[in-house]
Structure formats: C-alpha cells, structure tokens
Length: 141
Image (tube, rainbow, N blue to C red; front, side):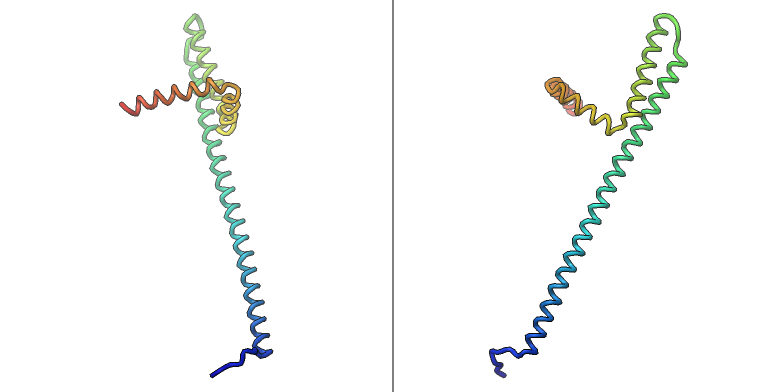
C-alpha cells in the first residue's frame, strides 16, 4: 500500500527513542573500549616492569656470583711475592666488578654506558666498528 509522506507522531516518537537508544549504545561501547584499552595498557606496563625487574634480579645474582669468585680467588691465590701481589690485585678487581654489577644491575649499567657514549662518542663509534668487524669475521668463519 501507499503511505503518506507525512510520518505520524507515534512513528516520530518511536524513531526518536530508537535514535536515543542507539546513541546510548554507541556511548557505552566507546566507554567500554576506553576501559579495555586502559586495562591493556596497564597490563603491558606491568609486564614490561616485571621483565625489567627480572633482568635486574638476574644481573644482581650474576654480580653476587662474580663477587664470590673474586673472594674465593683471593683466599686461594698466593698472598706474598710478585705472584701474590698480582693474584690479589686480580681478585680485588674481580670482586669490585661483581660488586658493581650487583649494585648497578642491568638498568644502571645501561645508564652508565649511555653516559659513557655521550662523553666519548668517537671512541664509542670506533669500538662499535671494531666489535662489528670481529663479529663479522667470526660469523664468516
């Protein structure tokens, strides 16, 4: 049948209600998406933090083991004479290196390297090139 181009008042009210409901649904969906994105961001930040903390913990453990190695070497190596002086110096250096690794952890060492590169950029580039050449030769072998 043919309908009049004029829409009845009842149909207008129903259309208006449907439009309002659609707007509410879209708003709710947007809010839900925002909350989901926020939650995902929080989980990602936590995961990143956990990975960084785990890396720091593993580095600290390695540092403690290096310290122990230095201590053990210091106890077992000769203590007198030229050989004793040299071995005790090596033991102290190993212990100090382990102490640095234990205290600085991976994040602190990364900051130290960044500062070192900023202070000595040309030397850092030359060292990087040298390491690249060595790795390239070893990989080619």
